[in-house]
Image: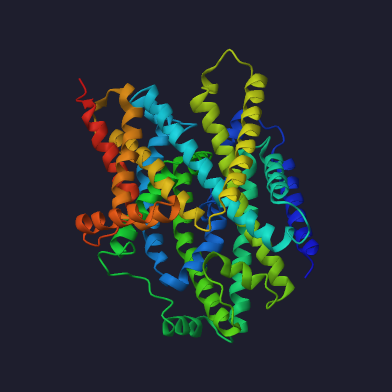
Length: 505
């Protein structure tokens, strides 16, 4: 199959996005960019957020986990659903009551300017790293399977993709990406469903016989009952709930789209619809993963993990149509997370760090000029970070970023929880200190609990690794922390804020 033929579909897809952007960004202004003039259709936002919530990592990584963990990821998905309920009925009413453009303004209202800028800063760091890591994963797949064969260097691929993303988000912002995300989610889900049907046909299976075959091959186990395991079901469900609360409810990118909806009721409908649909979509990704492993075993394909889906879809054993659908589905999974992050980071930096909405002396034209400059600057930062990940060239780079997310969203979780659950007043000037100290404490705990992870990723000496392992065994007795590191980080931040607080007069 010609790489140029496949790449022509990538270019055609971009052209379609640019056409959509052209029509949706007409007569746009700063409010259009930041919150879509609070006129977004809740059904479009809900559907488009499916793509943003999943991203290219889900598209290739979730199917890849089935070989080692079965359907255990669905434990986390159940937690996601519970977390969305908290977002819908606790956080959204707060944001609408305060009529927020940036959700971190709540921290200024509740605590003061230092807490406000601290929350925004932690969001900016986490989202920049997370979005570019996800982008790197997908761009690298396109590079390996298509563009290397065309003689295009990785830096050129990254630059062109970022340039095109910049072009279709440059003017319209949220107003545009509500529509482009809807389009991209459609292509991603279409690609997923077509691939499932095709592989079931290749294996001569229907839905019920596919589930039976997965069960016989021990690929469909959902619940892990080993208390000491990182995959223990209570840890996974609780961790998944708090991941959603922190990484959706306390994330400007995700909430920016929700608060672009006209009323609180419609925004809540959006969240409840999204949470329900994600249960089914994530199940389909796990089903896809199980089918891929069955098909790989039948065809003698030994590839596992993140490389399995692209190797099957682009390896020549399926039809050219499937290869095209996979490529379109993959980039459709990438761009909702990349374009949304770029827009949200621009909004947060302009509003939270620069205080653009408070500068009444600036004209609308001056504010727009500043916003466009910031938007381009973040695009450059994205490019540099993608190149950094390429230079590191670590197959587990996503694990690193998920770990970093646990550190950076934990302080946000602690700040918002303290503000909502207590009536105490903190000494605002110490807020940044508490939020920096908490991840450092969690880092020490996690280093002792998971020494193997740090030995692998930080190239620690064998002697240091052995010492850490002995100490870990003595302290934790085989108990392993998993995604609950986010909860612990939030709890330590909460306690730290309590120590610098007093009762309201």
